[in-house]
Length: 235
Image (cartoon, rainbow, N blue to C red):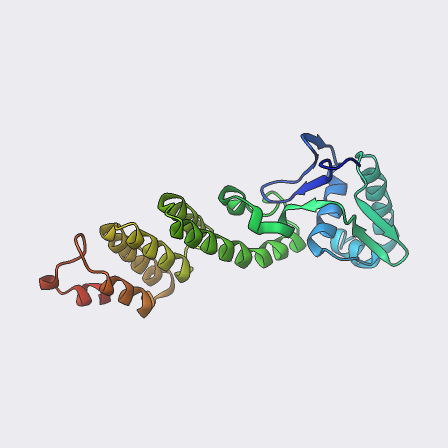
């Protein structure tokens, strides 16, 4: 295959197989096989594949389903799967978006893994990838802020909060970004929203580090000292 025309597999947001600008058609029954091999990222025995993809099928029926899925993959126009006696694996030349998540955009990172798929194994993979997505968004927000791109940094931090509204680190990052931008009043407002959310959902207050962060950066837009800033933060 000519350079620049490697197969690209997209799993965030939807399933798509591309070669350059061309999207290749892959039957639905074969998409799950391709996605499983891509997400496991290793050679998988045929028994593990059939038990994962067709757990309710008898052995002979699941084996037949696997043969059909493999045959249909071969009709898609791309060399996707290596089949050996020891098992199945995705071709090493296929680029998979979730294997290089740090290169994804904020929009890509906010998309769920195969959102319209409800198989148990997909939901397990979705849960496994979530902490990685959150960590990347947090790191991206801090890098953007350090380079002076505060609006883009806040966009990334808000994306992390949408993914996991109860993640305290994401809220603290957003507060830090507002303070770095000089927007103390918005930092204070977000602290209040975070406090209300955590109390309502978990029955806890924000971490002490978040409160100290705001106390250390008092200024216009924050509660005046005469009104008892510390007490207001602790309520």
